[in-house]
Amino acid sequence: MNIMANDFEILNTLKKIQEQVNQIQKSNRLMSPEHIAQALAFKQIKDELTEMKKMLVVLTKNQP
Image 1 (cartoon, rainbow, N blue to C red):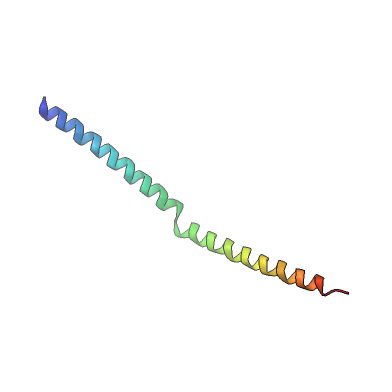
Image 2 (cartoon, one colour):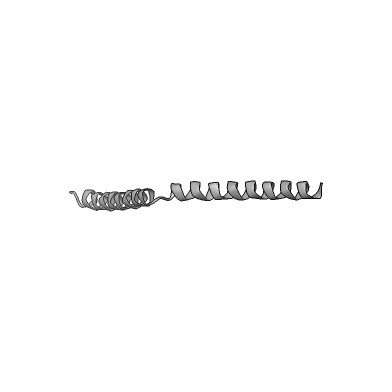
């Protein structure tokens, strides 16, 4: 009976470890190199648009 209890505990522990591994793999897929590249490109585009908006504000303020 004690051996069966230990086996049950081991199986439960292995199941918990497998769930943690699955979560880590899922989070790694979310931060794949493609996702990181897309996020960086989006930030660069956003920064460029912000600069363009600033230039437009300056240009429109200087209009007579």
